[in-house]
Image 1 (cartoon, rainbow, N blue to C red):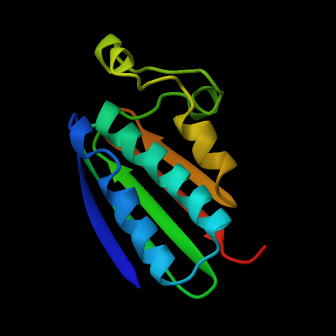
Image 2: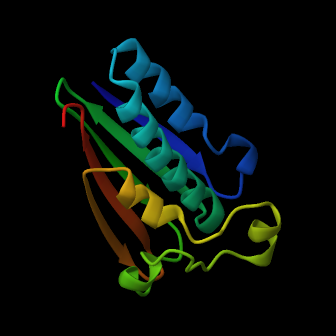
Length: 138
């Protein structure tokens, strides 16, 4: 099964819409609740990153009987130093985003912690792509 969700940059009122939709699908498929929680945390963090940093983005979700594969792409400013961005607490979020309670620098670290595989690619001035896989049975 494949699903695609569009993410609007700057629209914090819609942040979490795609991750909630995927959560419902995983529950309908009787995926273990611990796995669902991990996936939803990673999805939500990715979704918020797009909302906070990019003009727009998309989330592609591919689910089969063994795993969920997620690809998040955005047309944002890109990440100049991915290793630095992966450090807990590092953030380039604006003051306005931080005032709303976002931008604590835990997005990418939480995404990595809650998935079995994660790969980030980015080009400054073009955007960022994050690919994540979580296996249903450990």
